[in-house]
Amino acid sequence: MRLAEEGNYQDFRNNLRRFVERDVAPHAAAVDREGRPPIEAITAALSLGLPGLPFPERLGGSDGDLFAQVITTEELARGCASASLTITSGWVLEGIVKYGSPEIQELVLPPICRGEMRGAWGLTEPQGGSNLMGARTSAKSDGTDWVLDGTKRFITNAGWADWYLIFARTGEKTFGIFMIHRDDPGIRFGKAEDKMGMRGSPTADVILDGCRVPAGRVVGDPARGGEYIVEMLHNSRLTIAAHALGLAQGSLDEALKYTQERRQFDQTISRFQAVRVMIADMALKVEAARSVLYQAVDYRLRNHPDARRYASLAKVLCSDAAMSVSTDAVQLHGGYGYLKDYPIERMMRDSKITQIWEGTNQIQRLLIAKETYASC
Image (cartoon, helix red, strand yellow):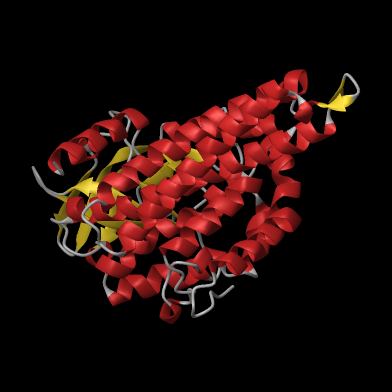
């Protein structure tokens, strides 16, 4: 799928929506129930080139900009949050284009764009997730190789992905980014986690025990990985916000559908004033979150001074909206909302993690306060 030169995002969104309704949403319940990757959606996504969306054409990608990435993530999550996360998780390797050598770009990215391989990244550790610079995983130079030791926790696609972007300490106050392949000596994976939600997205530990990789697998300068990862997280935070926004919109969709079908006292419950007030509040949260997210994307693309603060604002607003709107949508379904027969039960479970990962919302609020004071 290619964007028009003039940036016709509405046509792009409409095409995605039809794709999701046809090839993604119908399989969402089975994926959740069986706790397996959304193979049907992933296979269908290849025909649209979605795995390679953000990567350059020279590497087999589509040169999709950040708006295209956000719209794609949002629309996929609207139908199946696990499919959205799994299809777009390879995009975390986008930083290789900016910081990696031509050799490592050619090694890693074309197979991912073609859907032959999958990517993941390892940041969180057992000792903590939000304290990124407290990472204990080490990387030591040994001749022409690097040797990595440590454990990465709660890693999306762990054991299923082929390439892992690993953030590791290279000195007392320096960090590097390394590309590890699943077949490298010294890498293994923990048990698959049995999760509340996002059950179609594999999660496990990545364990590095004397994992030896060639020197060419380091991304850029092995002493500047901290600087690189902060920059890479900026884009990632926006796509994670879009993922939450998709869940919020999908939950609102389900509430609208149900309340217009369910009848009580000889009329649909959509006619009840109390229901309409709830729907209005849900719509307000979704549209407010969407407005801030799109403003954040615009700021990011223009290198606006407020870009970092708006990324955190968007992450908090979108994920809080996902949790709030999905909870209210369950309430509007009444007892049926508590049954797995209805998509909203899954959406509520999927929504909770959006307030936790990619920097908890409590951490994001501290960042927002810091940036707000700095802008005075």
